[in-house]
Length: 184
Ligand code: HEC
Ligand code: HEC
Image 1 (tube, protein in one colour):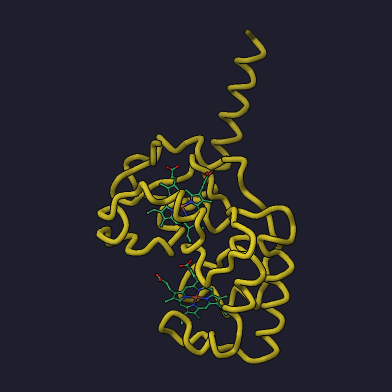
Image 2 (cartoon, protein in one colour):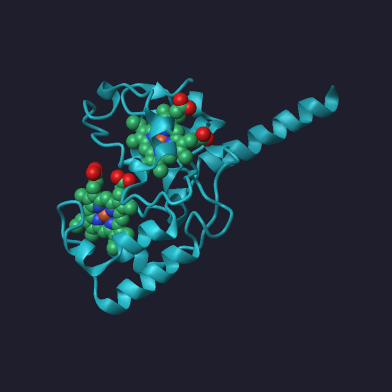
C-alpha cells in the first residue's frame, strides 16, 4: 500500500515538473491532460537542420518514419518539389540529396520504428493517404477537421496531436481544438 502511494506521488512530481516545461496553453481543459503528455509511444529520431529549415516552414517537419522510403523518393524528386501540393518547395540540389538521405535513413521501412503501419508496396505521396492512417482517422467527424478553423486539414497533425512535433502520436495526447481531449 505504502509503496503504491509513493509511486503515485513520484509520478505526480515528475509530471508536474515536465508539464511546466511544456508550452503553456490557455485551454480550460488543461488539467484533463495532466498525465497525457507522457505517452510511451514516442520515437526519437535525430533532428536534421536542413530538413528543419527547408521543410518545416509551411507545416511541421513530418517525421521520416511516417512514410516508407519509396514515398520520400517520390516526394523529393526535383519535379515533384516544384509542384508540391500546389506550392513550390524546391531546394538546391545539394540540400535535396542530403535531406533525401536523412529521410530514407529513418523512413518507416528502415528502422523498425515506424509510427504508422503500411502495406507492402504502398507508397503514397501523403501520410494521410496511407490506408492505416485513414483507418485511424475515419471516425473523426468533418466538423472537427475541415469545418474546424483551427484544424482545416488532417495534414495538420500538430493541431490535434499535442506531441506531434516530438513524434508522439499516442492516444492520450490527442486534443481536438474546440472539442477537448479525444475519448474513444
Ligand atoms: C511552400 C510551402 C511548403 C514547403 C516549403 C514544403 N511543403 Fe510540404 N506541403 C505543403 C502543402 C501546402 C501541403 C499540403 C497540405 C494539405 O493538404 O493540407 C504539403 C504536404 C506535405 C506532405 C504530405 C502531408 C499529408 O497530407 O500527409 C509531406 C510528406 C510534405 N509536405 C513534405 C515536405 C517536405 C519533405 C518538404 C521539404 C522538401 C516540404 N514538404 C516543404 C507545403 C510546403
Ligand atoms: C483532427 C485531429 C487530428 C489530426 C489533424 C490528426 N490526427 Fe491522428 N488521430 C486523431 C484521433 C482522434 C486519433 C485516434 C482515433 C481513434 O483511436 O479512434 C488519431 C490517431 C492517430 C494515430 C494512432 C495513435 C495510436 O496510438 O493508435 C497516429 C499514429 C496518428 N493519429 C498520426 C497522425 C499524423 C501523422 C497526423 C498528420 C499527418 C495526424 N495524426 C493528424 C486526430 C487527429
